[in-house]
Length: 137
Image (cartoon, rainbow, N blue to C red):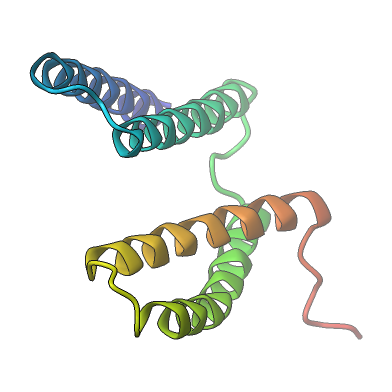
C-alpha cells in the first residue's frame, strides 16, 4: 500500500507542477488549442491514474494482492494486442504522413499516443471480458 500511495503522491506532485508551469506560460503568451489539448490529455491521465490507485488501495485494505495472476495475464494480453495493432497504426500513419507537409514530430507523437490508447483500450476490454485460457482441455 505504501508504494501505491507514493505513486499517487508523485502523480499529484507532477500534476501540480504541470499546472503551475502552464499557468506561468499562460502569463507570457495566450494559450492555443494545442496547449489546451495537452492539458486535457494530462487531466485524463491523472484521473485514470487516481481511479486505478484508489482501486488498488481499496483492494489492499481488503487484503487482496495488488497484482494477481489474472491481472498480470490481462496486462500481458493487452500489451500483445496493442503491439500487433500498432503495426496497423504505424502503417496508416506512414501512408498518410509520407507525402505531407507535416513536421516529423507530429506523426511520431500521434503514433506513440495511439499506441498508448490501444493499450488502454485493450486493457479495459480484457478487464471486462476476461482472458480465455490457452488450455482448452
